[in-house]
Structures are given as C-alpha cells and as structure tokens.
Image 1 (spheres, rainbow, N blue to C red):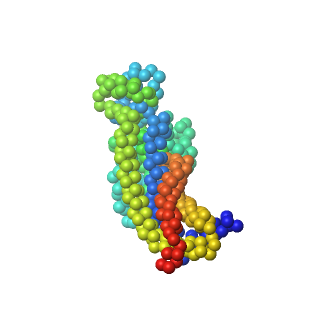
Image 2 (cartoon, rainbow, N blue to C red; image 1 turned 60 degrees about the vertical axis):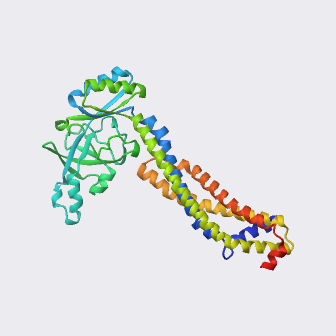
Image 3 (tube, rainbow, N blue to C red; image 1 turned 60 degrees about the horizontal axis):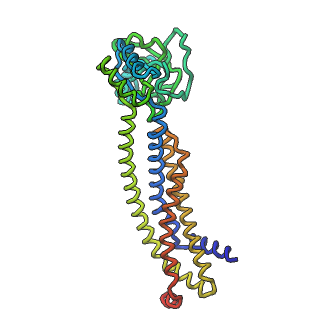
Length: 386
C-alpha cells in the first residue's frame, strides 16, 4: 500500500492541471537538447582527431610534384625512412564541356545559372592508382582496365547530384587544349575529414596521360622522420609543398578546443536561462503542492510517504526530461556526424545520456530539496493561509 500510494501520488502530480512537466520539457528539455547535441558533435570530432585520423593519415602530404621530380622525391623519402610507403598519383585540373554530348550552354534556361558555375569550376581528376583517398563506391563498379574503348569514370556522389548525372551518362572534359569524353560507371563517396585531395573524378588509366604535368602524394612514416624527410625533399625539389599531418592535427585540436569552450558557454547560458524560466513557473505551483501535501498529512498520510512521493515525482520528471533531450539531441547530432562529417558517433550516445541525466537530476534535485524543506512548516499555519 505505501509503495502504491507513493507512485500514484507522484504520477498524479505530473499530469494534474498546472503541473511542471510541460514547462520542464519546453525549458530544461530544450537546453539539455542543445547540450546533448554539442556533446556528441564535439566528442566525435575530438575522438577522430586524437585516434582515428592519426592512425590512418599519412605523416606527409605532397603537392605540386612535377613529372620529372617523382623519382627524386621518392628517393628523398626512402633515404629518410627506408620502410616508408609512398603513394603518388596525377592531379589534372579540367573543366566540363559537355554532358551526354550536349554543350552546357545549350542546357535549359532554368539550369543556366547553375551550369554556368559548373562550366567555370575546376574539376580535379586522377587515376585510381592505390586509391589514395580511400573512396568508397556507393553505386556501380570499377572498370576493367584492359578495356580499350571509351575511357571510364567514377564521379563523386555530391558532384553527380549537382550535375544531375548517373551511371551510363557521359561527360566531356577540356584541359590544356586536350578534350576527352568519359562514361560514368561508378559513383563514390569521400571520407569526410579524412579525405586528402577531394578528387571530383577518377578516370581509367591512359585518359590523362597527355595532360599530366604534376602529381600529389602521401607518405606513411613516423612523425619524427617526417621532419627530416621534409628537409631532404626541400633540397631535391624546392617547389614541392610538404605538409605534416601532425602539425595540422595539432592546429585542428587547438581550434576545436576553443570551439568546444564556446559551445560550452553557449550551452551553459542557455541552460541557466531555461532553469530560471523553469524555477519561476515551478515556484508558482509549489505553494499548491505544499498545501496539498499538508492536507494529505492532516488526513492521516505520513510525512515520510509524502516526501517519498515528491522525490519520486521529481525523479520521474528528470527521467522524462532526459529522455526527451537525448532523443531530440541525438536526432540533431547523429545525422550531422554521419552524413556531413562522415564520422561515427552512435557509440557516444551513452555520453550524451550521462550529461542529460546528470544535469537534469542535479537541477531538479535542488527544486525538490527546497520543496521538502518547506514541508517542515506548521500545517496549521499553511491551512489557515490556504
């Protein structure tokens, strides 16, 4: 009987007219939603910068390696670290001239502005060699390199959507006075933050041979050796740009740390404002709660049961608010991480849940503590005031 009374008392207080459940969801729940979403995004980015990217990224990224410098650059890297792995691929900048044999200028007027931007933009093309950006096919298949007819092509998924093309369509490119047409046989997706060169297209071997003038590359070796390798490359090929991944990650961590601090301040201010709104609304209902509790005590209900019921009410309120914030915060953060940043964050839900439950429990515990202290007032005084 006592347990049944406690539960019914708590549930009745949650859905009675003027209850604080709706206010809690709108004020505290919205602030916790922001807090949960920020927690998932920042934690996912920090984990990627501290573990995933350093494990998979090359120590050095190379730009503007001329064709006649590839051997010298490779030798310099192997001199610094004989066990190093070096991947070099061509980089060719081109422009789209036709789509399915139709010049961009002949596209319908509704697409004219978009196609004008497309015709002016540079498209970075390369070969599939070593799959240097570790792209993943989302449609179609890689081609058979033994084919001797029309060149084959894999296009990035975002570019395919922007151009309105798919498997089987043909795109004509123009670069350095040379033109060629390639048939789309595959569509691929980049790896987000872990992508190095962001090629818009990968074509079959031989299609770019007459216009290749420079290459880009990645070298896998330890960071300490990478510094020495940079010096050797600078001597052998001064024009080659080398970027140390460790330096970029350190800079990114610093920027993300500042961003995380800013997000924490914004979330804290939002949480404080929501708590003020919640406290002001709940304060209006506390007098009624105290009066009802005093009436129950006058009718024979023990103070211990009333206190247990109020504690359970606030515990249920914290649980419902936390579930609301976790669900909505995850619905905001997880698609952002998966589809825009392409980083996993599903396994970090426990962290968002921990933050939401902790903050909501502490916030509502203060309100419950105040209410329980007010119950110590003389019942006769409260009843006369009521």
